[in-house]
Image 1: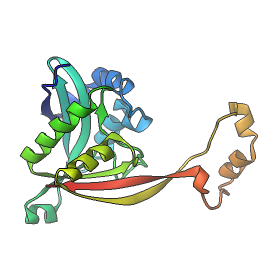
Image 2: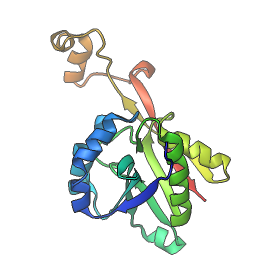
Image 3: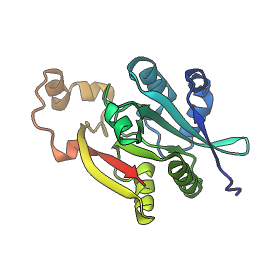
Length: 206
């Protein structure tokens, strides 16, 4: 496998729009597949909810093949400018209830992507604030490897993501269930540990 990976920046909304087919195919071939990482979700979020953030998608390519996409946005903040740092976050954080964000890497290319992204982060002098991630996702594993190489990494639980298990239900049987009726009546009460998971936040800087 040729491991010569190029990292390109995509900062033009028109180029983001043109990624739809490539994005969808890559997501299907990654371990990060979730509705919140689909092109449809993130492009719509960017179009309507990004505010004053600046687009910064990283495209990892090997020859003509796209092997990774990292959906980021540069956060403009007066304190960041004062401190002389540039902070990037995942597209989709802070608004619209986006959960389980990650870097989209083709299966089998994870180790090569780690090295390419580390070189990019070091050269760009960025502070990465990666929120709403799973503890065992690629972004979290990447942060752990950077920490072993001397990068400063801090972690914190960011939020609770409730869910309802539908295993064993048809749509009709779920609608008739006690849990669904309580949900419809806004009467779920405290979220039980078996019905929730934690989303994490990781900050990475050199």
